Length: 269
Image (cartoon, rainbow, N blue to C red; front, side):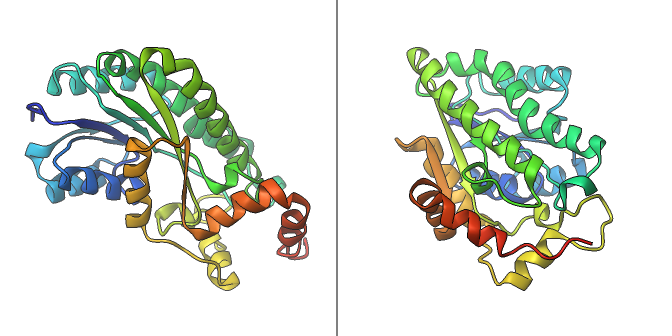
């Protein structure tokens, strides 16, 4: 097993692709020891090959499983001498489509991974975080957690939940020296943009975004903001100018933002 050997350490879920992978590479490049966790074992192997086995530890982790979390934390703690500077709760899924098109089973998975997975991570990570001075939890939320987005209703609900959990825990854990922050991206060029109402759907969210001409930001931008979220003084870290504009509009012009979103809706079948 690779060892942190005195280096700062970060535990990353959803590390096999997208924001998780880009963040793992950035932190490793900046001399951190990285824990890589995902259900995609082939993707994890690729990340290990890229950043070097001596700089990381990796294992399969389903964030819905408390047993998986316990096993992962045990191994991570052994590799870091009982320390964890940052827990990055990044794993997430989504479905894009009219509310009635998305199955109950898919909605269950979205809630279980995006919300319960984060709660499981915080519970599992607290012992190591408490032993590490200046430790921090970073939760991946979304701009959809600032203002509810059409055809992303349940996904948006989960990201509002992550935002609320982040704000509550940032206060609650302050008296034991743990900060809690969130990453709130706009559309990022990751596999999650390929979500449809169900797996194998012909119409993907990425198609809608490209047709609308909306901005899509690179994963490297999100990784840099994850670094900021792990070090800065704010609670929420927006990714991209459109995320900042949406936060402003949601606060000061909510009705105008709602009308703008309503104009994007195509006729129902």
